[in-house]
Image 1 (cartoon, rainbow, N blue to C red):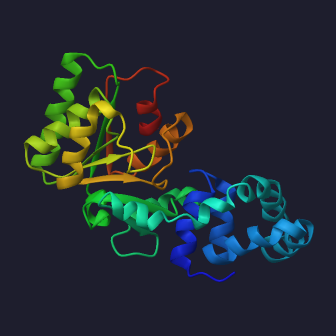
Image 2: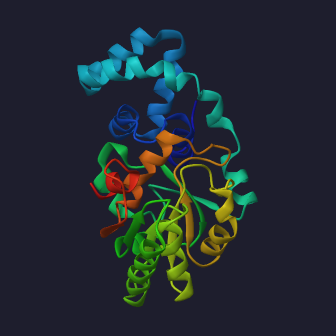
Length: 259
């Protein structure tokens, strides 16, 4: 099956969960299109294609990809879904690793770099993310914590930098609002598809962010936010040039972002 690299990167964003190290290593080793063909070929002759992969890329990747094949093959039908059309239907677009505006700071994530980003808003994510500051913290923030987060985000925006956060209640929302009040750019990183602005109580806020900044996800429209995706999206927020944590529990997602 032949498809170009860009289409294959979009397909991989639906095929593999974020932070799938083996998927990232396979795509980095073979290229997205050839890696996708490897998964498809493995349907009928997994042992053979795994042996070929081991010979080409080493036994460790060959064994790991063979073990991961079942979970990828179970989602192959998702690779042919109209992700691009669904993204456009909500006023968004898809940016892959190959496209202009891809945030190059995400290359530091190595094998867990996203395959594609689904974006509602700003065109040039590269320059925005490179000079951004993440402001994150507790969803159940105190009024003082929200005030401090707003002050920090306002100062960041005055310095001409984008404010990155997760669009959640509490500290995230306070940071986004402060940037918007200063008519500055803010980026909200979603755990689910950009067609499902979450949490629903922040729907108006997230639409404002999309109109003047960017709402971003690494999973396609229709993908629901769930716990593992909240944890994995934190690494994208942490690609900001600095991260400030305001009010966070010892085992919180906000602190995992900073770490």
